[in-house]
Image (cartoon, rainbow, N blue to C red; front, side, top):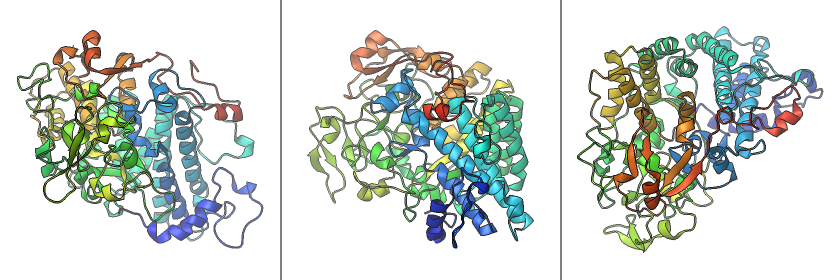
Length: 585
């Protein structure tokens, strides 16, 4: 299990989490206990400062929905993923999310609590007794990175938010909103200042702590999102140069050979990247959120919510038909263009990432044949020694089977199968920054600058070749490369939690989130006549009258000048009269 010495400090951490009240200033605490840290004396030493740092990291890991870390929730309220219908997850895609929705409240609450924990140490860093210059740099640079990351998430979700640079007291609690542009520049400046102070790599800690490459990736992401393409290209190139010899793409394991084949052959398994083995050995990870069975509350139930019914799960999340139809054929052409596409075998000869990252009918998942269609009353159980046995097909009969007809494979490690149950928890880590995102940030910035040199093809082709896909043809136009780039972000970063931001910053949310999402809960056969083409962002365009005869649908609504952001939680509006609500709420 990856760690940064939390296991050795778990008892001390229990005391710390109970006693430190990071939302208050030291002057608010008049009485101090005789032992343990308090907000009045904390941090009194470098060790206590380090505890505060770990508490800030840990707080990010508490942000979840349906017991699933937030990074694996966000794509399921977009065009490529779907959640079990309900107020929390249907309202964001139907322009009906409210100021009291738990999904809107929790990120605001958790990110500001994380920022407060950063300030608990940052504000007193200069006064810590006996701290060395190197120790002060270590704590300060990592805490400023965490704070920058928290603000980067807040502005993406809520737009203008209060920019707080030190601990809030009762006297200065009413803070007005700061513009997105100003906060973006604050983040860029902060990361530019702390990146040189951070170690190039934190692989010795399993990448759960901030590195220089992580800081540069976040800086480049903010520059890209704010359309500072020249800066984003420069920063991401600097990060890629530093990453050479430190981070690299991890080849898929031999199970990639099962992609496009049926359950009788074997089970695709991406755990050497996205499982316990991957988080301990893959050089692809740049920054990781840690979970730990040995620390109370430091767990999630992601695998239970993601897994199939036969896999002891509840099928809460799954890809949409819109994503499935987006996957190219192995010749690099769409399903409309490629002679390899066979409507009778629609998953054959597809981009292997379809099967490595998603679960579809006729494949093997968590040791079982996966068949949502009710014609399969019995399916194979491959956990038995020797020949598979037959079991009742709960993935077709359960009322709460997959609502999209598909599931995510990325977020589940089959090694946990025997310990994952309806009451079980997992400490599978969750990736936040991964090398492919950094590579695609660089490629996108260069494409938007219309600097279409070999370096653009190189980074995209590295990702495609790792995925057993053909490299891009040279000599493509800016529009063609933009489409190729957006395809790669969609399929390579699927369920990494970035699609929500992408469709908004590209200005395509109004198209892809208005009309219908297509779902295939009954695993019906379909023809490619359901699709009329693909748009300039590599999204399928459906013939609704035809598609609706094969697929179930979810109507989606996106209102311009409203749904770019979530509402500020009503509780925050009530507590802080200086806040103004986002338009439309």
